[in-house]
Amino acid sequence: MKYPTFPTIIDDCLRISISDLKGNHLLEWDNIAKGELHWPQGSSITVCVNTKEYTMTLEYTYQQEHRVIYTVFLACKPSNLGIGVLWYFKCPKTAALCRKLYFYNGYFVGRKAIPHAMYRKQTESKSMRYLGQLFTLANRIEKSRYEKLHYRNKPTPNAGKYERLQERLQKASLLSKGNDDKH
Image (cartoon, rainbow, N blue to C red; front, top):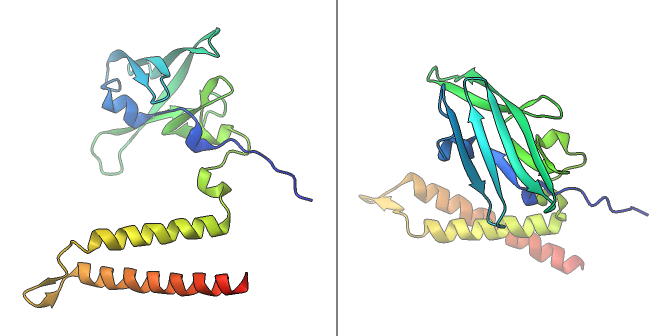
């Protein structure tokens, strides 16, 4: 008998990303900036980023009674394009560099610090993943119907993509019919 594990679903965790900080102009070189990040669930967090000292201070209330204030260290590396730098968080638990921190057990940590964490896709059955792929294919075909498939009586690159998508959908529908016959 296989027992369920009920893993933490990464997609459901609140998260802070480097792009969130950049989008709110909190991550600017040689600067101290303070602001709030908001999530659709109504939660918010106060963030103070000090790029002079490579720190980010988080301040929030956890479970409506615990006020939490702690510092997460930042790191930067030169871009591989030679233009500017890339910023990273240093996970408070593992010290690994990461671009996103996830809320777990009252703190924001890197994904690898969350034991048995999984993405939602990883918890779906094979048949559900297969169905999702079929819907994605059908959606891509629907969108590509409106693209130009020929120009001056010659097929465009989109025409080839459209034909390949059609073939994949036909194969997938044949496979699903074969699976229906077995059940």
